[in-house]
Image 1 (cartoon, rainbow, N blue to C red):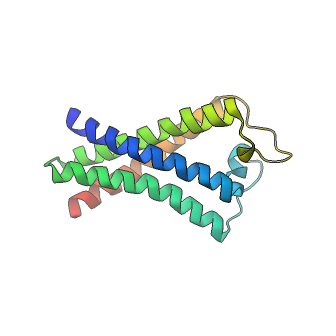
Image 2 (image 1 turned 90 degrees about the vertical axis):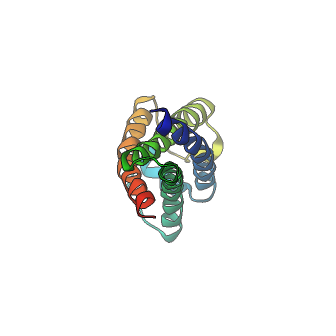
Amino acid sequence: MDFQLWPGLVGGGIGSALFTVVIIASYLFAKEIWLTEVTAGEVPFEWSPKGLLWVAAILGVMFVGSAATAGWVAAGGGTFWESVLAAYWVQVAINTADLLFIDIALYIWIHPKFMQFDGVPPLEGYWPHVKGAFNGLIIGAPIALLSGALAWLA
């Protein structure tokens, strides 16, 4: 277990820092991609080239962190499933940092102006954010599997 946990936490720490920077930048430069989330789905997401670029950047950070960590474990002699597990620990770390720092500390407690929408009340309560974190863990599973597979093919 320690063999997968340590690389996963290191990769997850780096991935979480990068993820936080990209999320904050997306609020500054393409805030509209978050409108559906902060209105609990009441406002549908409208795809735009700028929005697609930011969504790709967010998913890219999640994938690259997992892929690099899976590669690290595979290069160190780990099995396929150890690589996948280490890659998944990255997803757990990123989702935990997102929930605790971005969603709860920033969005719920601090309410910075750049994260608020005019005329849209802030998403109240913790549950929508916790639910989003669980969804992130589900999204992270195929990312970890793909990362482990690529690590083993490389």
